[in-house]
Image (tube, rainbow, N blue to C red; front, top):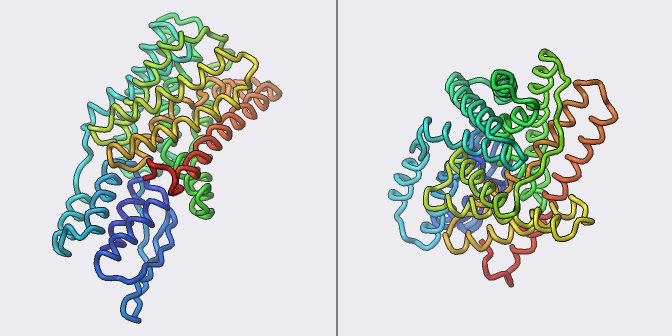
Length: 397
């Protein structure tokens, strides 16, 4: 039963530490004196020891997906089991009910939420009304296509590539039809639905907690997906003529950027199937991150972007810990959607555009900047989460 719970959690995108904790709680509640657990994204090994006897079992994890509602539900079930609130039969029944339950949000709701989130990103990047409309529509179509490809059992990388090609091509065509002078911004915003936020945050958490193997596997998967998104953009740019003007835009004022970040984070919370009562909290985490980053850059213009990203990541993790304590949910429910609005989408698009135009100097320079900013954000998230796991932190969860 403990293995089944861990398997469902890994399939739903939980990090290794969260899975190990749940398996140990289930095992102890069901009579084990000790549980030795080893979790990887591809399988789980568990040894249960009781009354000088032991059993070791292995389970493969074949399916992959993102369903943070299931992660939260199994975490709550593990807590109830740990406190002896349920019998063994009740645990089994509730666990199978959680494993078989559908997503909270229907296809139409998810498509509209993703379109809203990417439209908010276009506004965050400084886009006008036509660019926002184009980016939102292209992202919505891309999400609908992704859900179709999931049902057809496409591989993750092949699916990511096809959706990136379709979404960016639609954004380009829509921009041309609406006579948008610089379609690059709409293209950049339209593919952000593919950003592997769960993999990126889970890899950070695993690495900072010492789960090196699981963290490296997840980080490698995230890098492959990001490279696949870039490949889809690259193909569209090569086919369509890569000379797209992507001028520097004036960002929205701080209050507007904060509200837009809230909307984007809520949209991605729906995509990740965050429980309804936690949607506002996921949006709040995203708003805090963007407010910290933009506020630091506004108050201290000489501060490097990497330092601002570090502080923003640290702030997201702290706020997520407090929200997790008050809502009694895992911190990842809030950290993952809060992380997404800080992704440097325009800078990443400039890197791909530079390579498509054979301007390898500019492309490499932008790629290095993207890497450094993401690394700074990861360092902020990881450091804060490592510190707040200590017993002195009152909101540790």
